[in-house]
Length: 185
Image 1 (cartoon, rainbow, N blue to C red):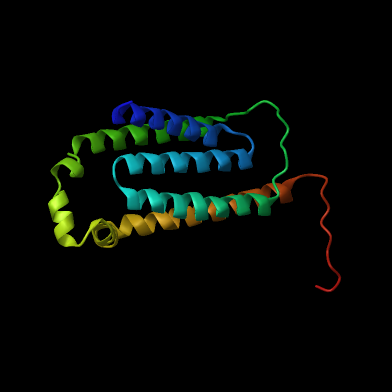
Image 2 (image 1 turned 120 degrees about the vertical axis):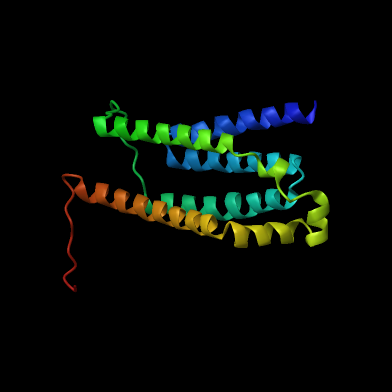
């Protein structure tokens, strides 16, 4: 099996696991598919001979972040929801349309810009002269791509806080639940 065929197998499995992460009703099942997804991505990085990125993918994302997600899922103690009809409102449809249109625009803009891997200054000789792959990745990440790196970490933090707020709001809004007040407060 050639490397291209192996890449297509990994890409198909990544796509399947990504769809299962989003489509699964059980949050723990989604987290397990996310772990599979991240390991498969590490396999793709290893095939591209980016072994450092593959190791970081497994250690940081599959190890630490997914454990954090599972911890948050268990902390929220999500109850099984009734499997009733799915209701989609007009604002939901509008937001899905805007999101889809945004993805199309971003894909169009990215397709117009030549790939840095084929045109950029990072040839194997330049990487070796700069001090190695790890040094070059660190320098590029924390100089040229510092703001996108920081923005990604802030977005992950905001997504976790928002999911906790939404989950706590839904629990407090359920009818029939009585709140107990501690007399010592």
